[in-house]
Length: 114
Image 1 (cartoon, one colour):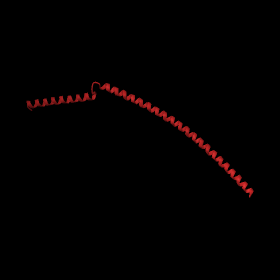
Image 2 (cartoon, one colour):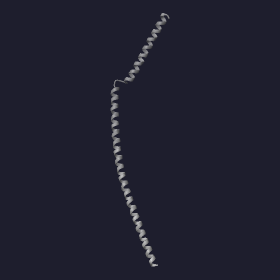
Image 3 (tube, one colour):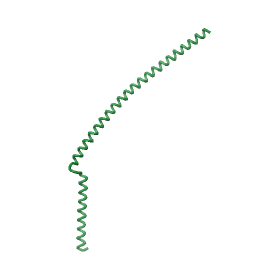
Image 4 (cartoon, one colour):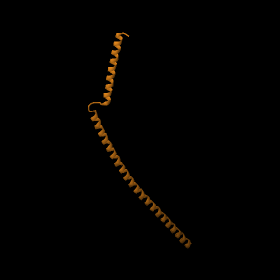
């Protein structure tokens, strides 16, 4: 290998090293920050996200309270309706028995008149 070839090889290696170093530094800077206000912007976005999360949690809690209240009201209405239905069935049974007693009495009276 001659002097010229060695010089070209060393020069090429230095150029490649400079380009590689510059590229690595550029990637490092891009990953680390995207500008001087990047950390403030990230903090602001984090605060906004935290506020949105808190608001969503409060909304969920309110929804759950409303759902429990509605469920309680519906259960109370269902219990009242079931009690009313039970009473109506018992009353209907009593009327049926009373009607049968009247029919039997009417049949008995008809039987005496014939």
